[in-house]
Amino acid sequence: MYSYSNPYQKQPREYWTAIKLFFSQKSALSNLILINIIVFLFINLVNLFLFLFSMDQAFVQTNGVSRLVFWLSLPADLSALILKPWTLISYMFVQEGLFHLAFNMMVLYVGGQIFINYLSSKMLVTTYILGGLSGALLYIISFNLFPTFSANVGNAIALGSSASVLAIFAASATRAPELKMQLFLFGQIKLKYIAIVLIVLDILNIQNGNAGGHIAHLGGALYGFSFAYYSKKGKNIGSFFENLNLERFITWFKKPKQKFKNVYSNPRPSKDEDYLRRKAEEQASIDEILEKIKKSGYESLSAKEKAQLFDASKRS
Image (cartoon, rainbow, N blue to C red; front, side):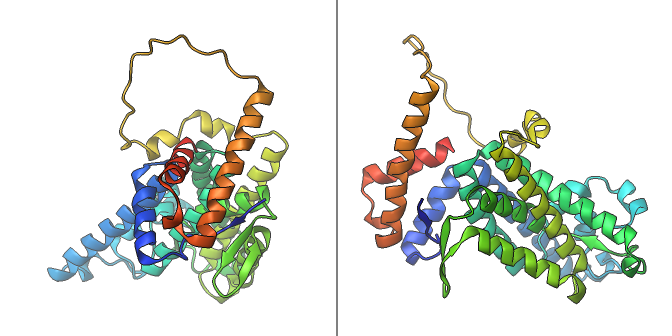
């Protein structure tokens, strides 16, 4: 077992190098984060344009958000949802503000790295989508079931990637509950305790505002826990959606790998025992590199170690 070092505890130069390396991979995780950032920038640039030409007030809905955000956000009212079915997906890529975006992307990055280490990038994309859908389902059911929400169901909307992100983080905490993360001011905390705190905070804050958001978070966390729990037993509850190859929609702008003519005969596949032994050796080597980064920073790595870390991230 190794401790997961917080990637945000870097010097500015190391931090920028790590960002460039991360997005240059064009992996499922980096593309999910990039899509969220692009959608956020697009919405805000459109709103800025409307503001500069004094058109912003004409494009504001009665609930205080712009028509573009309203068009992409998930309504609680079933009659409105029928007219906007795409919002079941689009809402999970729309962020409310810069802090909302930054926090969600930070948790997605950390949780996603751990998730991929134990599962796969294909499962990551499926969990992001199904976690978001589970959050949407619980949100819609709650607002149409509980009397306390009846007065607001007509105007209520949900937006944000929090349900999807919490699904991934909950799945990571379920698969690796004893894994420790280095948190600023708190030291090393086990992943399971961080996940529990996030979930408890959502439960306690349902009655204190943004009830729909907190309920959606819980729906996402429930899916993430269920997915990881059954994956430990060799069952994949998201297999149907994985067969749809949702990952290709996230990595559509990734450059195709250049094909070379293979002049060698295909080697005989390794036995399962050999494969698992080789994977264990590779993981041990990666653990040593991560520990070195934790103690001395990214720049302390040799060129060979940086290449090894980069290759491992691409294989994930």
